[in-house]
Image: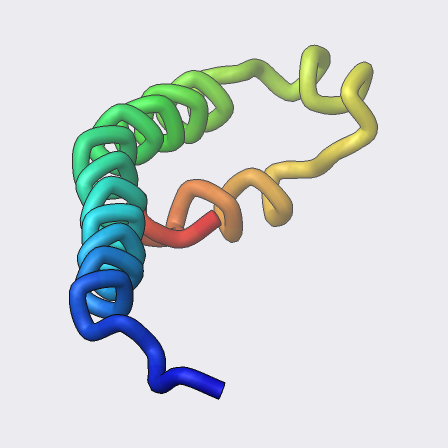
Length: 74
């Protein structure tokens, strides 16, 4: 059996590198919008009145715990 072609191996390695780079760049550009969405949702949640919270089936303690999370935590 012939040894693998070095040019082919470099091509395969380059494709894998760029695939991983694309994946990481996509994460970098999407993540800030996810963080902003979480921050907005938690801010709105903190502003809800007790009646609305009761209708949703949650209490102030649950809301306080959710709002206290850092924006980067899901």
